[in-house]
Length: 377
Image (cartoon, rainbow, N blue to C red; front, top):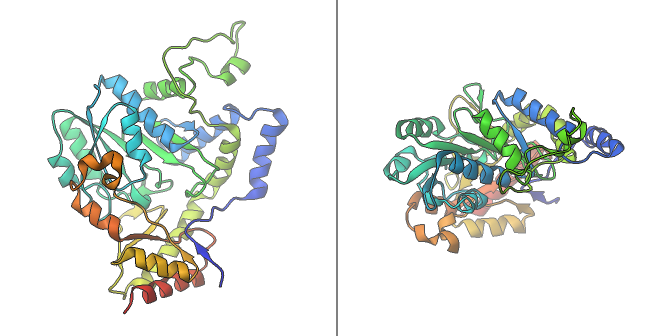
């Protein structure tokens, strides 16, 4: 039988090539008209006030922590409350900004538990980094309220949340910065890119300088702008080469046209999994919040003897994933080992089942059937 993989990106090749053709014919493949179009389209879609297109979500996270640190005068070693249940780039970027990750535990949604967050606030806590795992917003609003109460900034790692809506409002509202991923396996796929959405327009403008080596004026503006000295610029501070490019923006513009349609199909896939696994006591499904239109980037379950279950599935041509290993088990973050028992327990049991647009109803039922065999007596 055909193998069933965790992720298989889908591109509308002809539409994407038509968008990219313009870049190749004009010779303009860097940041410029296409990147500006994609930023405008993302602002219109999400109704977030600002959006800056970057080469990855990791770059966006680093900019968020670094720029907020400079804006608010945070010191080396100041603390960011974060989750251990995430891809390591979330927590690496905190450290790249000279700040210290302090880990809080999970709730039933595998997101940050606001009760755990509240117990770990100290005089050196400066912000909370919330991760919407798999597209699930968990108890985001409660964490947002905690941040307001304690005068903390909120950074939303929304890498999985393209298209997630909470009571009709797109994920990212209320955050000082929300960061989205458009990596190849994400719901809005490009080869790799991301978007950082600052609430404050002044910080959005800063991010545009920081993402292009600290230069005060981007190349497109210097080329097509008005004035006899349009080519002149200043270098205001140390920066990075984090900006996105027109080729990736072209892919993003096409994928955005289909995002709601594609996410609706993901929710259909999740519904089929729900039907098949509802009566399986060996499989615990991660709950979903009411009133949420979830992007369903992941379909996560918890099982005992997880590694053995994955091995059996692999033998049957099914290749799920694990999202994620508890970061405190890694050498870099072992200083916090034991601090988040629910995250450690979930890390030992979690599986992400295949979830992509190439799956059929029969594929889902095959995966579920093989899973029941792998977890059964």
